[in-house]
Image (tube, rainbow, N blue to C red; front, side, top):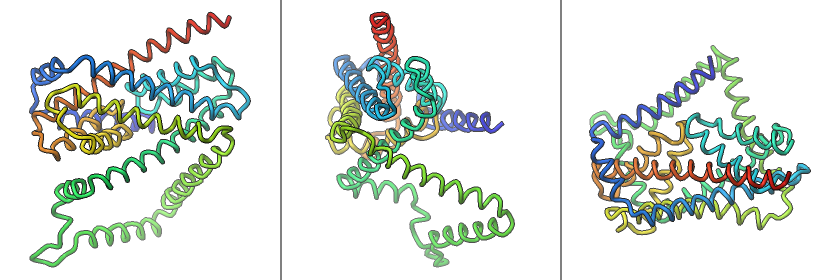
Length: 325
């Protein structure tokens, strides 16, 4: 029941946001946007995606090395691409799937695989935070104005009553927390333990990095992943006339918002990515009618790229496996 509810919420979130963004957009606009794409920039986008995913596979091998067995590059890359492809259909199942592939092909215990994936996710989290901080530094005023506009009412003290809505919100959380503590101690304890265990897991993930033999190379692969992610977004902007005029700073903001949309619990970022990117482009002067089709086509190109690389990784995996045998 819990699994069903989790996926119901995930698909509901993605589907609901997708409807919200495209409720006034006709299919002709999407087709027109797709036809306007510069094929060379699209190919460049897929190439940057290849290097990003290859770097992820190489970094994963470095985490697996201390466990006593380093998988072949072709196997690691195929497992990573399988994970991405499966995540497009079912949220977070890709991580389990890629670990299962290595367990089957390389005989590495799945619990060890999962531990390295958690460590890898921690490194991605650190880079995501760094990207957000960089975005705030580059476009601080734009981001703050956007957030203030979306939170217009709560951001102010009511002129008639003098009520500060931030204070009301904080007080409400405090009261609800106190009531839960005295009436639902078991639930309160469960939530508290969950938070503590989360931070213990983060600490464990950080400590696992000490086993990596070549830390500079590990950081290089981690950096390459995010540089290529940004490069892919740059290629998508250059692929269309209406977005090619934007500078690197604007692209950074949209890249950050799109990344946030991708990590939310929606299959392949469907709905969440579209919403965040559309809202981001509106900040910089595009209309909803212009921004929404771009978000859809950009997500579609990235998804197709993943499927292409998945197929190619499978072909390479089979070829090297036969060669090894």
